[in-house]
Image (cartoon, helix red, strand yellow):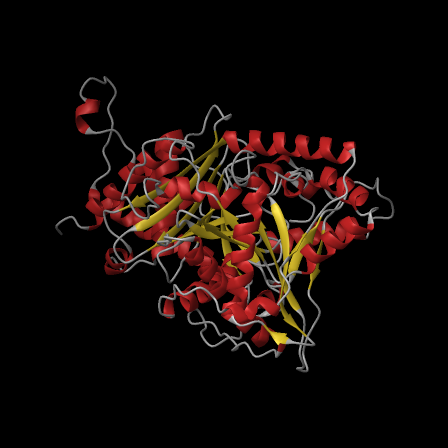
Length: 559
C-alpha cells in the first residue's frame, strides 16, 4: 500500500510529531539534548540486537493474546528506497548473538549532512560526552560553510522522479557511499532553525497548549511535518528515513517518520522512551572534557553533482514548496472535557470521538462519507492495520437526529417538522455506540473486511495469466471505488507524554483527523488542502467544537 504510492511522501504519507518544547540557552544545551537522545537510541538498539524486547499482550477484547512485535524491530537502522514503479525498504541486519556492532547516525544541520560513528567494533561505544562533542562540532561547523546543494529535497519529490535521480547519483562512487551511509544509519537527527511566527499564520482555536516562544502548536506541527519549505528546514530532512528526530534551536522538538515500516504505536513508544531518558537525567551544562579530542570529527558528506542533478533538486524543491503552501493544517485542543468525562458516560473514548467526527462532518455537509480509522491487527503475525468504517447506518440515524433545526428556526417554515426528543436521541446514540464498538472489535479480532478484500485483489493480480487480464468485477465496480475513497481519514494517536502526532489528508477533497484524548482535553490535528473548494479545517474545527459540546449536553441532561 505504501510502496505503490507515487506522490511525494511528506504530508501525504509521513506523519509529524510535536513534543513539549525545551528551554535551550546555548548551543551546548542543544548538543547535550541531542547526545542524550542518541545515547538512549543506542541502549534501545542493544535490546533489539539481543531480541530482548518484552513480549506484549492484548489488554482488552480477549486479553492475554500475544501481539506481534515485528514492527518494533524494523524502526531503527531502516529506510525507504525509491523505485520507478514501486518502492522497497532497507532494514538493518539481524545482530542476534551479541558481540560489538558498528552504528552511526546522520546529522543534518543547515542542509549539511554529517556521518557520526557512535559505536565501532574496534573501539566500542561513544559516551554521552563524546557524542555531545560531535554535536558541538557540527553546530559550530555548519554555519561557517557556504550553503550546499540541498540534496535532501530529492526525498520529498515524486517517487519515480526521485528513483531516477538517485540512480544517476549512484553512478559516482562518493555519492553512492553517502547514500549507503544514510540508508544504513541508525536514525537521522535534524538540527533545525525555528519557523517564523507568521508561517501559515491563522487564529488558533481551543486551548493554547505548547508554545516555543511566540510560536503556537500549529506552527510547531508544520515544522515537524515538512520543515517549512526550501527557505526554512525542508532541506534539513531525509524523508525516506524511518526516524528523523528534530531539534530546533528555539526549543521546538519532535519527529518526522516514514510510515511504511511501522504504525504510530511502535514509533511513539520508541521516541517517548528516548525523550523520557533525556528528561530523567540532571541538567548538564558543562562543556565535554577535552580528552574527547582523540575522536575524529564527524565526516561531512560532499556530493559530486552534475547540472542535471542541480536542476532536479530545484524541481523537487518547487514541488515540495507548492505542496506545503497547499496544506491547510490546524492543531485544536478541545478544552471542554477529556477522556475522564467520556469514561463517566460508560463509552470508550475512541468510539465517542469517532461519533463526534461523524457529527461534525454531517453538520458541514449534510451527509456522511467513507471514513477510515486504523485498527491494529497485531494479534496476527506481521499484522499491521485494518479499517474501522465509522460511517455506519446507526451513526447516520443519530447524527441526523442531532442536526435537526432548532424550534425557532422552524417557526418561519410552513411545513410541519417533527422534532426528535432527547429520549429518542439517547436511544439512537446507544445504537450508534453499539455499532461502532462492534465494528472496532471485529477489526482488531481479524473480522474486518478491507484487508481480506485487499488480499483477494492482490491474489487476483498475481494469478492473472497476463497483465491485461481484467480484475474480477468486484474491484472495478463503482461501489468499490466509492467505498475506498476516504474523505475522512482518522486515527487515535495516544501518547503518555504531552505530545501529539498529525498527518495530511489522503484525498484532495478530504480531511485528515488524528486525535489524542487526555484526561481533561482532546488534542486534534486536522488537515485538508487549500486548493479544495469544499474543505476547510477552520470550519471543521468549529463544527467539531459544537458537536462535542452538544454531545455533552445530551449525555448530562437530567433524567
